[in-house]
Length: 128
Image (cartoon, rainbow, N blue to C red; front, side, top):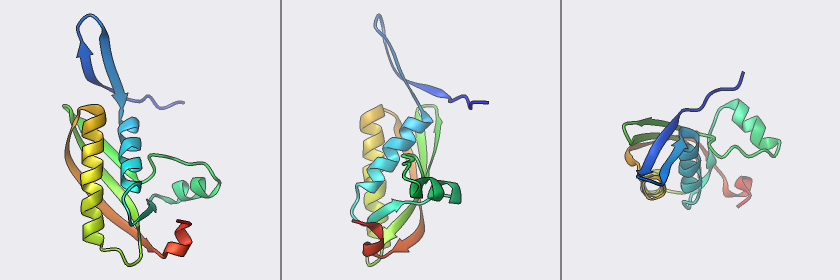
């Protein structure tokens, strides 16, 4: 049975209609924003996500958990960081990038961007 996705109204304009999104869309925005930061090799995830990525199928919300309540978003990210990069500095850049991307693209307020470092990888393994 297909899982029903919860939708969230992000705008309503009288006489025109409304704009809705899902938590998966917000998760994709967060994941893409995080991977744009130098030092982030990839998003972490469970073994299923790792197998899916090795088979060539890209899950854009991999390693991202989003909770939305009353137009406020909490994001949990699992990251794989490049060896030699400062974990705190890289994490701070990710937090800033994810927060601004979600707020600019959706109009929702980001309360928290929590980061878990799952792995440190050598650059040669990342393919960058």
